[in-house]
Image 1 (tube, one colour):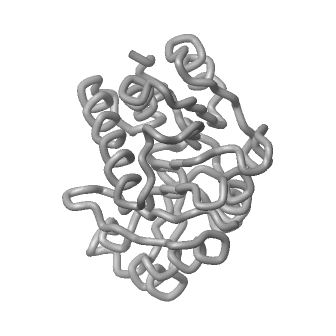
Image 2: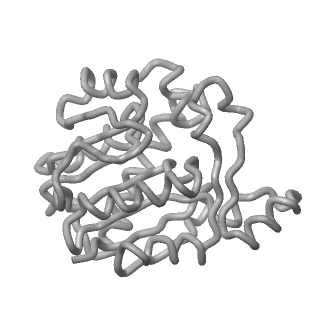
Length: 224
């Protein structure tokens, strides 16, 4: 089990059972929605967890898909050190806040980013979408999670108005202040905004509201 601070950076929660439960659920979502998009994880050569943290999701995928070469990257050096020591079936690297990643073009059959684009500002998102499109094979799967419109507090009229107008709302997180860098805050997207942004670089973009979920999922395919 990762130390409490590493778990909190990932989930803003210290409960060990919740860390395991949410990680297992995310792994199941990844497998299910990959299959819905026409990609079987068991048939992939390489899969990247972009923003892997301390392996909350990846720990379950390496257990269930033993023939796949899994990679994980994150800006959190402590999390990457922990994963390297405790999840030996995957390969890990620390990345900088901005691209590039240490991989050649068209290297991964699938890339997933859970609770990453929920924290980046618009410029960082565009730079990383461009980089992820570079390392994804044509026809490969990209899966990201976002805070959709229904994740915003209904009483936050100012935030709702900004989200409807701009399509994106980026705010400083008081809960994470002093724990994560200043550029890592909280972001919400409208469905139209995120579909449009991904469609500029990827094909076959689909948006899904997850029943009883705190985020939405977006899938896309690598462009040839």
